[in-house]
Length: 384
Length: 255
Image 1 (cartoon, rainbow over the protein chains, first blue to last red):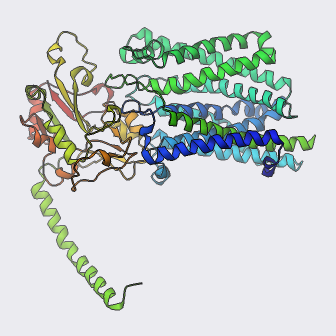
Image 2: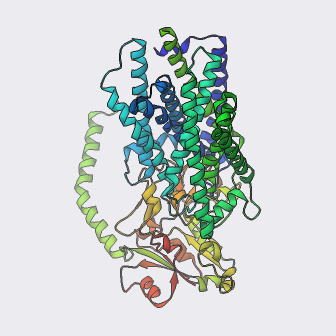
C-alpha cells in the first residue's frame, strides 16, 4: 500500500526532491546547533522560547483540526466528507510529526528526551502534552491506515475501528487543551494566564486547519485527478467562517479584560505586541499584518458571494492561515516573555540557522503529507 | 579477560573488607553530620539586609565568590546568554509591585541582591517534566540534577524571579579557572543557586554569606525559633519578592 508513494510522474519526484534538498540543508544547520548549542538561535535569558515552540503550538492546532472533518462524517453521518476524512487524518499525522520534531530541536539535551517517559511526572503539563500527542499520532495512524487498507481491499472497515474513531474526537480536543495548559497555568507569565487560552486555541485551530485543508483540496484538484467535489469544500468554508468569528471574538474579550482593567502586568504585554514598549517594537508590524489579514479574511468569508467563489475563498484561506500563524505562533509565545517578570525588555529575532531549521521541518511535514496523499489518491484512483 | 584467579581473589577480598567497613563508616558519617550540621534545618532561608548592602555600592564579593566556587563562567559573548546564580539589579526590577514613585526614590539606586528563592511551593518543580528539579523535604532546598535535565526550559518560563539560567553554549569555554571540587556543566541544561547544598551538608555556610564583607546576608533554619534568621524576620519588617503568587519565597529582604 505504502509503495504507492514510490511511484509517480516527473512532477511528483521533482517536488519530493526539492523537499528532500531543503530538509538536508536544514539538517546541516541542525548539526551545527547540536554541536554549538541553542546559542546559535536568537533566544536569550529573557526570551527562552521562540520560533520552534511557536511552530509547535500552531501545528498542534492543525493536527487537532482533523476532528472538524471526522466529527461530521462519523458522528453526524455527513456523507459529503467521506472523501475528506482520510485527507484530514493524514494532515494530522504530518502535523503531529512536525510538532514532535519542533520539540526535539528545541531541547538543550535532545537525546535525553526519553527522560520524560523514564520519570513520568503527572504534575507537569509537558508530560501530559507528550502523552496526548503520542496518543493522537497512534490513533490517527491506526484509523487512517485501517480505512485506506479496507478501501484498497474493497472491504468494509472492521467494526472495532469505530470506537477508536469516536475516541479520536475528544482526543483531538485534548491535545490542544493540554497545549494551552502548558502556558495558561504559569503564575509568572500574566500574558498567558487566561482562561480563554484553550477555547481560543481551539477556535483558531478549527479555522486555520480546515483552511489549510481547503487549500490542499484545491491543490490536489490541480495536480491530480482527485476531486473532493464542491459541497465538502463549501461546508469546510462555513466551518472556517464560524471558527474564525469565534476566534476573533475571543481575542477581543482578551483585549478588553487586559486593557480595561488596567493592571500593568497584563496590559504591558499587549502594549508591547500592538504598539511597542519603550522603543522596542519588533513584533508590531507582524501583529498588525495579522490583524489586517484576519479582518480581510473574515470579510471574504462572511460574504456569501466571495465564499462561494473558490478563487476568493482560496485567497481568504491563505491570509487567514497566515494571520493565525503569526498571532498564535510568535505573537502568543514570544510576547509572554516581553517584558520579563523583572520587567526587563529583551527583544527576540530568529537567526538564520533557526529559520532554516524551521523551514526544514515544514518541508519534512510537506514531504510526509505528500507521500500519504499520494497513497490515498492512487488507491482511490484505482477504484474509480 | 585479564583477570586471573589470584587477581580475582584479591578483588573479592578487598570487596569483603569494604563491606565489613560499611557499618563503621556509616556510624562515622552520622556522627560527623550531627556534630557539624547545625544548619541541617527543616526550612532553610535567607535574610538579606539591604541597608548594609547599600553601604557597599559597587561590591560584588558575594557574586564573585559564588560564581567562582560553582564554576559559573564570567565571560559571555552577549548578556543575553549570561548564567547567573546570584546577581544585583535595581529595586524596582526586584519589586515591580512596589510601585511608588515617591517613597522608593531613596531605593531607586539601591541594587537588590537576587538569587533562587527556594520557594515552599516552587512553580519550577511543578512544571519540570523529568523531575530534574525538585524540592528537598528535609531542608527545603530546591535542587537541580544537571544530568537529568533535558533542557526544555519550561522551568525558566515558570519561574517568576528570573532565577534560572540556561547554558546557551558550552559553559566550560567561559571559565578562566575551574574549581575541581564542584562539577562543571555542559551546554543545553538549566542551572541555578542551590543554597550551597554541598557546603551546608558539611556544616558550612553558603559561600555568599561568608564572602559578604558587611554581614548583610544571614542564613539559617526558619523553623527553629531560636535561629538568627527567625529573630531577624521577627524584629524587622521584611519584604519578599512577589509573595502574591503563592510561591512562598524563602529570601527575606530588610529594606
